[in-house]
Length: 160
Image (cartoon, rainbow, N blue to C red; front, side, top):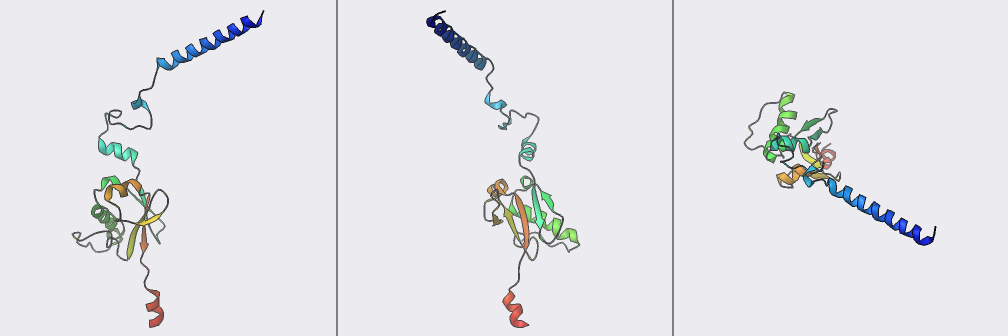
């Protein structure tokens, strides 16, 4: 056996493997809609938009400082900050036996009296709720934190 025959066999083997590989890759190309991370409405014909959003956007945790139990809320079910403020009021104020206040002038500043509404974004930064437009807030909020407003300590020391 000479070196020419072995080189020719090796070339034929490489050529055959290349052709087999090409045939295999052309047999069953995956269409883009079948990728698992692509959520197209055509891929889920039985789901409407609300079901699809609820499957994609998880509920966020609402933490009221000083309480050991957290609540969860689905932000995609609310259309504005006013609706969120109303839900937070029902969760933490009205459920505690407080009197039901009128909701016409309800916003995030007075949803839970004596508290500020803040949120943690995907980078774990703590930001004041209401600074972003609603859709961006729903997209980036990971956790809502309700923090107590601290009184001015100088007044207490000076008056005591």
